[in-house]
Image 1 (spheres, one colour):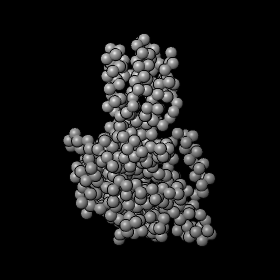
Image 2 (tube, helix red, strand yellow):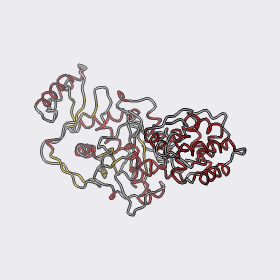
Image 3 (cartoon, rainbow, N blue to C red):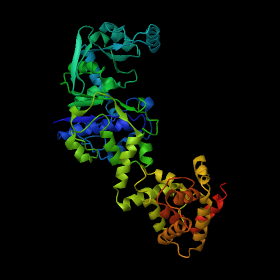
Length: 479
């Protein structure tokens, strides 16, 4: 049975790239009727961020990426949090030393830093020179007994090559002389990523190891660990990077990339998931909208691109707009009203008024918080014309007559409804002989401050007679 895992580090809130890794790993497993495992890799305690681990669980739940085994759904390979597995790493690291695949290293940080600085000055890639590689077992025992600090390093071969096959990038070969003697166990007893992820994947019987392609060059080291531990090598699937349109990396600190900000701003999980699936992958046909169940059926590892995927917030908005448009009216009303309530006082607004307002923009908004931005004219009393609007209002002598007659008609309305407002424009058209842009645009600018917006009749109706007259009075002396 195929077993994949998503193994995030709780060092920050998940971003788009993290979600794609989880999604692809999930799809590989489920497409093949396999199992998807969650493992929390929290051995880097210095970078641990409070709340990040819980957010991982929340995201996987929100996006319906149900894991078969993990911290909150335990299985036969528990525990699934690395900080709860420390005894295993020490045990296996010492086993590798015994089998001569690893060794104790007593080099101080200051010594190693000097060596790194020298390599940097010489424009060379630093590789640990193996200072402690051949220390005798007697000296090792002596130094351990004396309480010297140590790390355990992997003993890499110095000659020949190491090769492996990746399901996306094909055959990869690396000369062993470029492989560093990785630290497996740190002086504080915690394992490094390079050791813990390999050991856990082996112990948890992960058949398909999925991760970003930045780890392609490190995979030969991992292969030697599998061999030394006498575990079967898994299949490797290295995903291409996710870059933004400006070719910079995705960052947990950027609001466009960070899932917590996207979700808080009203990007829907199903839209995000649908879009993320297309970052570096494509289906066999031209279909663009998929449910998770449809993605499971369609997904094929061989259709993952080798090239970096491009994350474009504009494209994500396009997807999100589609899903907002297809929302049921009741769900849409709850969705948008929650954003309005955070920004505006709705106490004097009826349910019907709020309903009509948000439905006016249902086919326009691309994320939930945008409803606050595009409805501001209904809540803010003051606004200014930009230069383009002012120039238009001064472009024709008839415009002042149109505005004055519109004001008189509005004052004379005894019933305030959409039909009566529509008739106002009909009477202006007949009286002044104007139509189209010249008739409607001056009124739109005066009451909203902009040249574009929703249906004008609906906008006038929702603003109300009193506010319409106030706005006309404020702007009528635009000259």
